[in-house]
Image 1 (cartoon, each protein chain N blue to C red):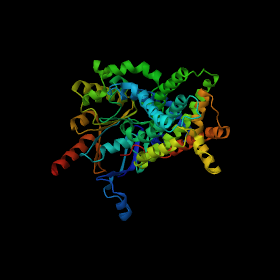
Image 2 (spheres, chains in turn blue, cyan):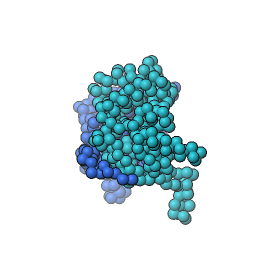
Image 3 (tube, each protein chain N blue to C red):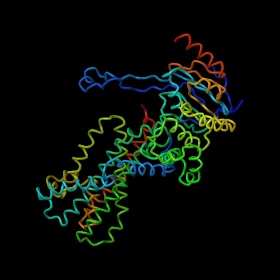
Length: 283
Length: 245
């Protein structure tokens, strides 16, 4: 077909529909849609449990039952509570904060597939999808932090100035989780089987993160194994929460490293996700 | 001649579908590929220009690639190759638009407008006017999943045109509306065209296309068959579809 309009002046006023944008421009476009990124999980949360009998109570019920099961197995039967003061609070801090990480990564993995309809209807930076799913998990975590605070008070823990550091700890934790969600989202979009594998990885990592029993129990075998175990940012992140609330010690080296690793996971995850931006939403 | 608003050059869209169960690992290792995997070549090198003030009716039989072309133009489906140039961000109005079914119509309007890039402040100023345009009355407080297709079309049309788009793409979304809604949406579209806007309309109603469009594009099996004044293209299309029933 001939197009005499190829020499048309007005063609120079056109721009390509799909362009490669810099990371800075991309982040700016995500920021411009921040209200959307927040509204989406809010609406989801409002409607998700409407049809179950106890409704939104399950946002609290689920992690509390999980903590109850771990208390039975690890506290009562296996004696993992020996040498740990206030084991119940110590345990729920670990369980709730680790569950936030695993729920965020799993949610990230399924987010692109479950938002297919939305992505076929509206054009927006696709990073919004895993970001809003991460915000959704943080919203329910807010209630769980309330439960931790109540349990801490009830067991005689006095409020401390350390609690003021919560935003900083949350920031590190969320950076790590969001980075993980980005990576899982892209991997799962490429190979749908990833979603089936992630729970096993997360479960193994849970036993290596000092959630139900002290990490000391798996340390002391070989020097380099110990180093690897302590490099897991979740060990330090959970230690931060316990230090804030219970005053238990934090290992300085791994703690500093975890902050850098969390940042690195976020930066890598974001770049990894955005590199496939134009692929998400294909039928 | 009016300035250009859309230029499409040699647009190809391919995607993979799995027609049957995915091949098992053993089979993949033996044959090196999955059994039920097929590549659909939905658009095979389509080129056209659209100018400001143009209203283009896109016609063709089911599965010809019309909807794929609109999705690609809206930036929602990445092209395999080819070039799409635009003067502004096109907005697509389709029947299958999905938001959150469990949330009320009102909340879905908010979400949709935010998804299109409105800020909360702008939305607070505009929301009443958008809701009024839908004329959904009390149904606006009902969950979206209880809506009929016509009610959904009203909702989505109101969202997509809340900020007057420069380039509006409509995929069959008007046909499900009732008379009053079609009248209302037509007025809004004509207003947009008078302001140097551009419309591309996929429809199987030749009457609707004749009424709204000045130009026609006929796509068949992923290839552009005709492009010209709407009456001529429709005549060509009708003759061809009568010849091969």
